[in-house]
Length: 198
Image (cartoon, rainbow, N blue to C red; front, side, top):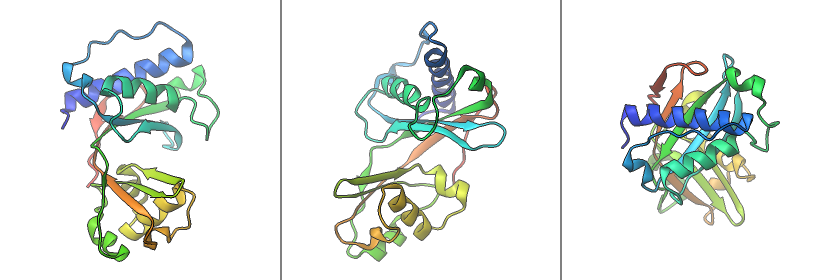
């Protein structure tokens, strides 16, 4: 678990990195606590302000890198998310930055697929769906923002993977869950708060 101060620092660091990557400026020299060197998954999300539309979201659900490095890679990826045009300088003051720090994913074991409805909790769990070469992920804040129930959440994660919405009912579909702490700017370069998901 990271403190609110850690979350604020993570968002400020991600913002500084985004500005560095967009402006080709001097790389930020930010002092980060020692525990930012611990392995951790994380995502960096950009949303338009004040509309709140997604503008980029890239990250690493599995703790392949230390948190500091994960944030660097995710921030660089978020500004050039292939779903959107590359972020431009004039947009820097038109987006808010959000950081999700994640626990390692764990596969959900069930006797029958309908049991997923009892195992997944909206507001607590992020989801990963895998089937063959198909894979999709949704962060824990997504179903809260869209006011989805568990069934809709499972279906939407399947769609994100490029699968049919009912693919979660198929026995060869694997579903993983993870938790996340989400911190974000209230306005561009503004105050940073922890998002309460539940």
